[in-house]
Length: 254
Ligand code: PGA
Image (cartoon, rainbow, N blue to C red; front, side):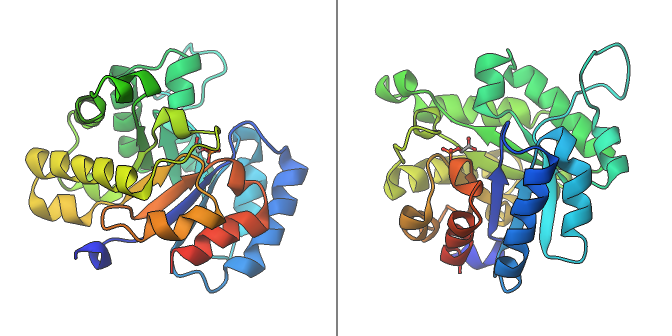
């Protein structure tokens, strides 16, 4: 098994939850719990919490990410945030292509690719989200959809740049629904993504890339999911908002 080659990464996606005060409190609760974490721990917080989160995590092993960035360096894009702005603030990671962005804000594989390129150029580490909707799973096209999303998002990304990319497989039907993919389903699709990476780059890149599962992961199912060969971590929504639950998943990544 090549799982040992890859860093286990547990990332919280707070979505549109917690203002700065609540963000500070949640991080203060998490810090003592995470001191002996055996995986990388990231909190991806709303833009307005980034400053507080960066201050609160200083000297700890918790890293900070944003939840999106724009593809342009600057310009007339009201309300948008560029990758360079995030980098200047000290942010290390950025979630890109989350299904909620695709579903509610019209993001496409092409704009996800543009954002990913911008993030890499600015020196951020993208967490690229891919995943099928329920109808696509029922139509039997999960592999095709996830392959296409992965290939388009990675257009123009070099083998060297792949070292800075995490991929998160998030079946849309499992996000926030309480319906988790079975460990076998998660492993199967994460394995298919790894196969795409081998085709696009090399077996070495495929084996070295961290692939997370996301979608109703919680302390009670984390161990089984994270125990699978191709599942190297988790992207956690709901369960990332309570320190004890998030830590329960971090602990399961041992
Ligand atoms: P969930 O969200 O854990 O609440 O299902 C996961 C995600 O959207 O990243």
